[in-house]
Length: 258
Image 1 (spheres, rainbow, N blue to C red):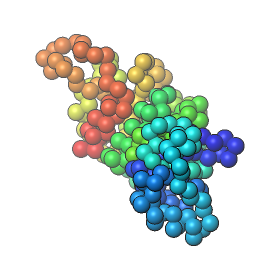
Image 2 (spheres, one colour; image 1 turned 180 degrees about the horizontal axis):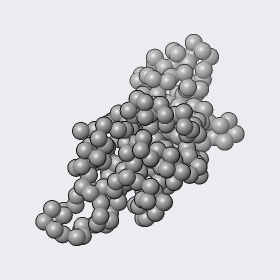
Image 3 (tube, helix red, strand yellow; image 1 turned 90 degrees about the vertical axis):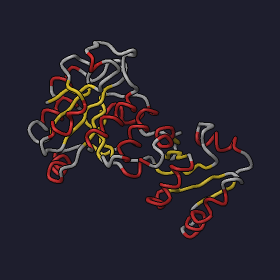
């Protein structure tokens, strides 16, 4: 839940707050917890006290629900300033290329829960660069996505871009542009690592309803498909249309990391 007046974001969930404490504890402005979770955050309370930060044990979980806007707070809520989403520029992408860093480009995913799950997978597989369209920036980092990322937000950099097509055009020849697609011309995701040929990759993931946009598709070097049941025996259709985008992201990132 975002506090627009104070430009704050409520971070809740045990794993998310613990990882925030460990890596970026200085970001926490205020901390609220129940009696049951109090013993787990004694060290953080001491740190907050030392810098005159605020921490309070609430009477019941209803107060945490009001702060976070969810019943899934797991007994703790930390308030931080709203995280900054950095506008992507050529200096940043040049650094990716120089260091051989892969990236994920989310083509209007839209759903905050899916975004959080993708962040978690990206952190798990060591992908720290995530790009989203500028018009998605205000809805991407939420209390829900932070919690579902299970601490993954502390390991990734999130960038915004005005035009997905222009970004992909600019990266032509420098990064391998891989789009996920259900079209028959797509290749198996098992080929992803071979497709890269020593270059860093930018993987484009689309939403579940429409997939990646036509603009993204035409600016990809390769299109890949996750093999579905019966595909190897010549079946043209899967029992279901597609995987959840967060599940698909995990599989593709696993293949990329091999």
